Length: 189
Image 1 (cartoon, helix red, strand yellow):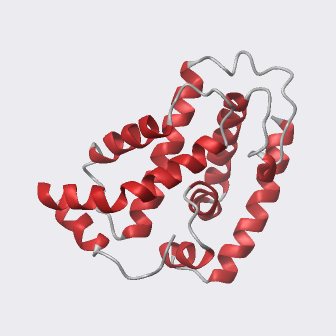
Image 2 (tube, helix red, strand yellow):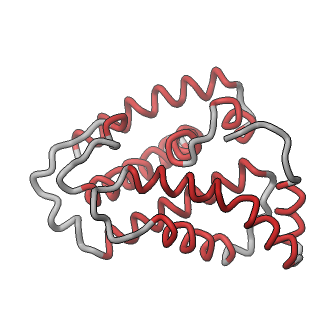
């Protein structure tokens, strides 16, 4: 995420949540490229020939974001954290709708860092990672949030620290511990 000053994304977010349709249009124009970048990151982790396209992922995540009325976006990082979470949900729902869990037998476990490498059944891995992240969230919500922000949203250590109101050192430590824990969980999945 670029830290150079740009349009007042936080102001647009607040105006959008207050019902300003013009702010919503301006916001989406400003953020569309970043949402596509996040979606491309997600889709890069998917298997070749995935039936869900980047634009469809962005659009579905946007529809889900627009349908969340009880959330007040605090700032740009908060918005992208939620956008990353929605994209993760779309991919997991897509994988589950295809019934890939039933066909996932025989898939060898893959460490978190290697998820970008082609694997026989990426959808089963997406679901397994989602379940491992849910378990991590039950054990330590902050560590799970660090993974979502760093791995899925591509947010820097510094931005993650700001979003979670902790030090960058804490984020780095949580990131390291979380990757190890998730790799262990994925190897047992």
